[in-house]
Length: 378
Ligand SMILES: [Fe+2]
Image 1 (tube, rainbow, N blue to C red):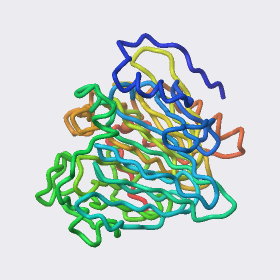
Image 2 (tube, rainbow, N blue to C red):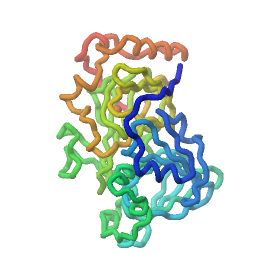
Image 3 (cartoon, helix red, strand yellow):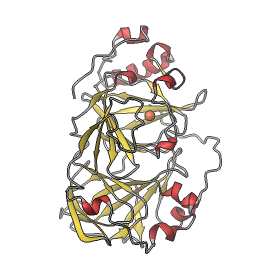
Image 4 (tube, rainbow, N blue to C red):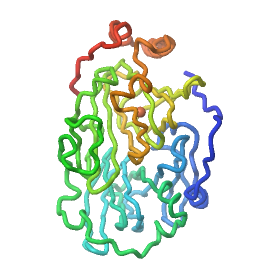
């Protein structure tokens, strides 16, 4: 299938964060997607004493940071501090993180493996170690640093600030990095705007393996019998969700705000992204592919594999949510199967045909806009 990365008209995209990022001397990967974060080009970052790269795809500019670091076999990187919360997704490898701050100087340490995800709280020191002797570790770091630097355009304020953090939640809770717990309908927490007061989300700072996570809620409105987990990081405004959908099916197209970084924990397929009325971009994916739907672009996910596919979407601040997840926005921001361009179905069936496979999309789903999908278990 053709993979195009055309130039698009963009508004101003140079921000304080971009100057800092471009001055680090490591690659900055741009465009619409990264085919495989496990093999994306890195180079030496002297300040952090490791190989690294930035990923800044269209739709991230000025909102969210994505950064890749590598830890050589058996090594420990020097600790660093950052004034904003940081989500870390383990692209590959096995290791340990130690976190401490001035109020709690005894490090809290926890182990992780392929596809673990955790949050390191703002202002804390963090140190990453590779526990394997033969393989490097690759970590994907995600934060709102670009947005923060647009408010205070001084990198030292975020990277070299002697501010003494007060005793934070992580300092007082022994189990801060233990497994997450479920909270129904907001649970009185700050982030409750899921659009559904009964919807559960998972609250925590450590998720051991996103490819094995099976505590999912049916997500009936986006089609394909998919299921979702919504995650709120403890003590933080940061959040994410992961969707899982069955083999040989595809989801409905939808659109929302910028800054969402999507990484694939498992599966094989492609996504199509387009600005209304403009050329479509095809994003092929498998485990460790990464892409970002640009601001207000429609996007649609297709599973070409023989097993369920998963995508993990790291959310921008909810102020950038774009509102397209609410019931009243669906007519404007979601395309039902019955209303989609017939070429969507045609491409999907062609791609399956090349693999000797057939679509599992029920014929009725294309005829009835109110077609009810059977919720699937994953
Ligand atoms: Fe989306």
